[in-house]
Length: 178
Image (spheres, one colour):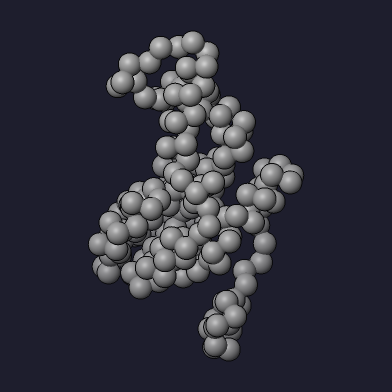
């Protein structure tokens, strides 16, 4: 699929309303009141939106690697929420470059426990599914492609699995993740 789901929905919304005989003005766009209709289009066209929630504390280098791995995705049906949890070394300066490729929302809040920070992100997420990644996650380029294929093969309310270390990791890096 490969484009922003919100753009896809806007295009399909325009097409479907024309098919139903609804005349739209140039400034008419889908709004929150059309969310149920948009949700039907998401299902009809098999587009899912994932909200990736990443709590961050003083890890701009790791966030850049995560952003690079998200940029390399073969499909991008997601929004990214970076929740900076009281960091002194902020990562907001890294985000502008990536915003033209996928939706990124950045929030800064006072430091708290990680679960509070994840809840903070959940309250602001728009996705049908919530994905919680740590700032040091590096995804293989086909992660969302495989995820969408698995979701198309069989609906589920939640999913998860064990973490895996990248094959390029040193023994020390692999040991740290256990």
